[in-house]
Length: 294
Ligand code: CO
Image (cartoon, rainbow, N blue to C red; front, side, top):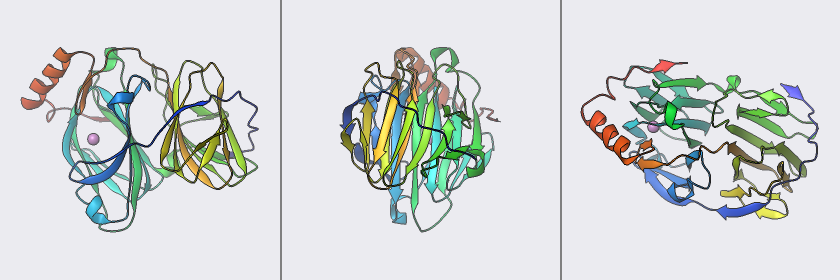
């Protein structure tokens, strides 16, 4: 843990739009909020989806996400509370615990399950889908389990705590670095009366999701359980102010500017590639996939 970065002034991007997301369910009846959905994929390229789940009632999560395929992108699961076990078609498995994450590169495809390893209590976390460039959509699948202790963090003098899942913040390198999309994924905890600033490349798309409390960005209030899409207005970062305790995700990445063809858990660049994914899936190729642990 390092301390005391000075959050040098940035000219903060403005909030372009607030998004509340849609309550839905996925897997075997897991209730969740789809914060980033298909209509925002162009605007928030390279990000394809963000689901937020926070369920106290086991009926709303106990079914989990039984066996299902993925091809053509990366999934990032970040747990705040509760435990989830993942297993894949190659026989790998791992346990996601509070404060930990799993980074999976689905690439050419695999089948996996994500199932709660608890029968009661709070289950809370997020799943982000990050697109792969066309040239890498068929790479061999792999994943990395990141226990809480593997996620670098720092605490500023005023108590602002930043967990760096991916990218780089104030000289602290995140647990994961990815080429092409250069994702930044921060979990920021702001005590009441504090401020956090993060430089962002002007060409990158960026958003904030407030999961506790409320913050202000450029004078715009961002309430709890809302995503703020940050304007691509040429300014060099984002500054977040919290009048009361707040927690948020700050996510940014370099757009791929490639066509997006999605059919459920397959995200490719053309309809032909989607049809091929279905053929490959139906012929059992995904079950035979070898999945590397990185
Ligand atoms: Co999955």
